[in-house]
Length: 173
Image 1: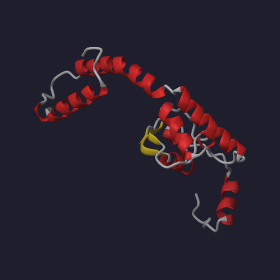
Image 2: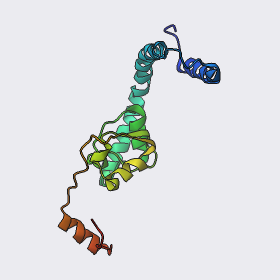
Image 3: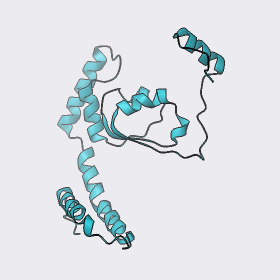
Image 4: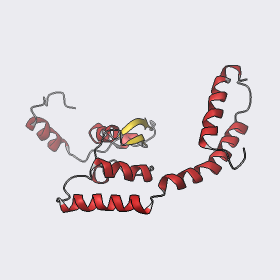
């Protein structure tokens, strides 16, 4: 529990705790353990994030050159995966709306470790699928007290799109 605890030390401790899980008294109060975890994370996370987000001068110059090359070639589409991966590595936490993500985040497989859909009832499957593709894992959060999805298309537009794609309109409702 001292200030020199490393991520490796925490992983070893986690493995020890997992191996002793069978002997755990389930009537024990979990709050002290949660407080201990919160305290350790409070000490380690800022240091870890400072290391991860630190972009050295040389790396910054490499990324700027790659970006300039992309712009010189016309800058069409999303950034090359090498640049995107480097940006995500140095800025690992992103917040984006379901509609804003496609404009800001390239469609690269497993770009993120985790995507979280909060207020999941507010998005439709068609706009969610590309975000699932950008992540290795996903958490979908919602409950029956949320507003249901409000589509941007009216019924007439929806019907016309279905007909244009040769989909059956009968029993659409």
